[in-house]
Length: 605
Image 1 (cartoon, rainbow, N blue to C red):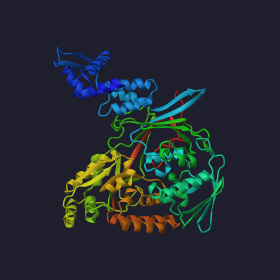
Image 2: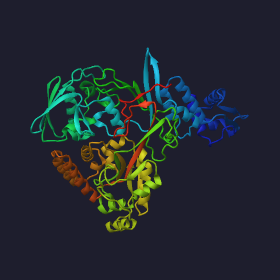
Image 3: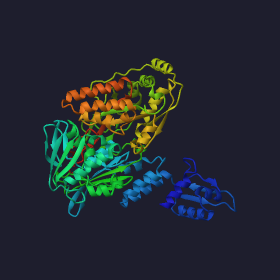
Image 4: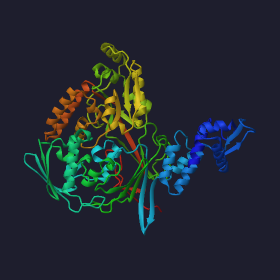
């Protein structure tokens, strides 16, 4: 492995396509490039020659020109080494090599085809029992699996497989269903809740869950407050009292008609008290819950979820789910469709082509993603973005229809509200002349602004910046990691943030979440006066038992924020999930993921 690293370092110093062409160079120059002595260079060249990677013809005499010929390409070396590691069962070594040594290299089509052959469904016989495994490629990685700090859709989905909540919300029937709590009582004034827990529910490390764990989980979230992603959910909780091992009482400071829905939120998942308390710093990497899958492995490239045999509910059909992080530039590569039973297409550019026809064994589910892309303006930071004219001018140059036409892919429709099925909260139009007039009126002097984005939103952000440049607004794009973008320091630095928000079916709760969540970009970029106004409006909405009236109140609140362009709705997106006929039980949740608890495979003939 170390010799391969030296080879790749050596090859990087020469132009592309010089294989089998002698390159004049001195021993001293090689020593300088490899940061070692000429003696060590000779040893390395001998080893590489023995492997038939290079040919070396030394020059006669000290300082004379020698000839170095590369017999193999970097791409070929990476591919062969990765294949060798995988064939030895060293999958971690394989994926690390692809990431660490494959950066900037155009990996061969044959290698990509081979790589994708490792994904999909496998059945392995172990100890007279068949183990079903699904290996899934992903292109952006987990930030945290701690329910209190979960922010992104992928993280939320895995947390929901590892943990359970007291109760569940059924969005189709709009009812609360029992889960860890089998029964509950509510006082007439709506301030006192008593929950009765199932007995014999085990955490993944084998201890029984009790009311003390429930108390700790809710109290922890409340104590974390604004430092937790969803700490606002516990604001109405006044006291938590353990009645006995299997019952707990919660008292609210004021009526909250959405309290049960909030308890069903993933961030309110129940954690084991002693494990979380004593290992808080690593709990997000190696969590323990009561869910249908237990975390078996989680590093920088591979995450493994194994079915929890002692799960109190219905055990999953799949025995093992593996997620492999691949380099993002492989996302556009065509996978081997006969090898990957499940493929999620959500890239910015092209859709999968030619894999589905009426006689195909493949099926596709294309659905609109609940949510939309948003552009926020930081009104807590000095700059032109604080002026209403500036925000209106930016809105006027974003032609959503043209953006979809030019960029294509899974961009589906202009957004005028949070979800596509809603009536538009605002109508967008395009007018460059009016945008310039607004900028002149405010006295804009061409100051440069900084837009923060995640890696996968870069293409959309570039397009928006190009439109802004046409009216004299220079915007520099700063790409930050998903982890950075959950931190308030990062959010406060940005003048603008462009991102995509995912929502779930309980619409009113998730709009409230967008406006209350501490590190929600919409909330974080409102100024202090607007925050006070939003919070006062929320008190009335949370105490209103009528769903239609709550949604009406939210619409009025959003409409006022839209009137002053506090943030902009941009686009709605869709995604495609392609799966083989052998996979059964496929359902796609609002976050765009398959519920791994339900899927199973028919045997191949």
